[in-house]
Length: 479
Image (cartoon, rainbow, N blue to C red; front, top):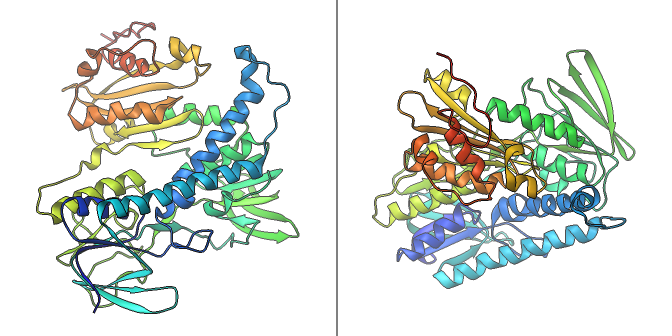
């Protein structure tokens, strides 16, 4: 039997590594198990988010956006840039460097906080034991008073479009293109599909997005989703809704995709195809048979509101449990669980988790949409303000989009905040804080905002809830 720990965390993604660091900070002897092999053939920390998800995709989104700005928008600002070109290989190398810096940074944080990093594939062998198998196949069993499963998720594959390296890829493969494809297909108009489609559209690809559902971004506030669809279409993304992919065939260096829409069977040819139809929990083989941890038919581990599984002392967090598959949700669950294990009281407000789509403009929201509230039988009042009326947005050459606030008509409590616009992902934090503290729309309206800022749009939207917006004409209320 190897070392005994107070806590062993399986997985070093944004849920696992945060849980491990927090547990160590609480004075618990902590280990974190990770199996991810990086490009240099060594185990790296950070999980999907740092290695092939949030961070590398944002590096490409930022680089491609700056390219578009330099190519099309600098002239409006009086900047003469001449011919602008993109070195895709150099962009990719920068992305890889950022990933390497951050994953290495986690290893440094483990050392600084006294977390023991264990390399290999972790499995919950019993309520108090974790079996780790290294790259050579050697298995070692560790004891722990508490175990945290943070195994994450993997992309979903679909039978009509089997992956083929370099041609039909998932989101991971789409981050490795070394040149811009002329014709790019994206299956799925969700967050990942729109972000990756945006990157390559900006760099010159003809991008077609095939979405089986007949409504665009159904989880987003209706008015914001409609505005986002209009803006992305204007940028050149051809988004085909109600388009169900039925098959694909690789012919040489091309991919022929068959799909069905309202007009019948269709066929379209691409140079590259990205499959972005969602993610599924990575839990198969993570828990030994007979341990007693309950999972559902999709592989999600059953947990309570504080991430306890059906086995005392075993917790699960992040993408392998219910709730949105978001890095920051996993991190907060990791902190909550570590605090509980250390004997403190802790909980998480699942109603105040922000969501962001990092297209340009960004789309961000927290809380209920107007549709959610109405479906729940809640009478609402809505305030909205367009960035076209914002002085800072004009100065930034970023007047597209709006801010919307959904408030309870009876209590004035803020139910949801929804933004499409430049820096929406940063601005949504004020909406999260408003929900966390149970703010009213009046609270936001009475808050002094700095001028000129993009955030003033949120202030004006709060004022508009009662028809008191200053920098736009207010709709007259029905008597």
